[in-house]
Length: 228
Image (cartoon, rainbow, N blue to C red):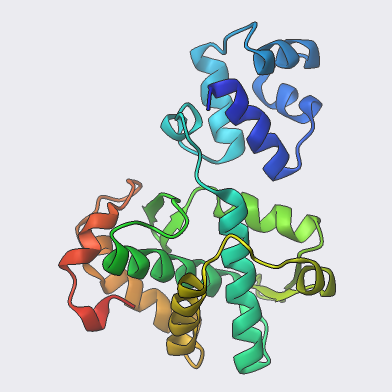
């Protein structure tokens, strides 16, 4: 995919209008139309603003192929759905992010490829893709996730009736769903503090630099009992 195709695709994924993106990078809508058609190039300042606005790395924005965001959404739905079925509870947002990380890296451990293709960055609160927050918010706005905020600022997540009825999660294979459920089942009785401590103690997080992407390959050096 070209840069202009990536911009159009990301706008669609995040539910953004041309006006919103144009305002974010300091151009008018007509200019953005030209950019999306490939008739006008982004300068370095505009490219940086766009990457910041979308919450992704510049290298990923200009990459020829984006991660499979639709599949990532389906992973989120599967995790939230199965967690609720096993516990009858809402899933904290931070807990969800850590489960997705463990699922992706455990899948890589066995298959030598990530399930979603997302890049996980090492930040203070643990490994997470830059796009997770955007995707999560857009799914809530689109009515796929029901999100309630507590007095302490935590976000609790369940599926909406719409998501449960309409989504078939067709991009996930039966083997991928099995892996998702194994990870969720392992952690369903734990709390957010425990899963955060576990991911922080893993080799990939420990030896990666803060604010840098965590190489998937590092998980292959981890002991099997500490993969998830």
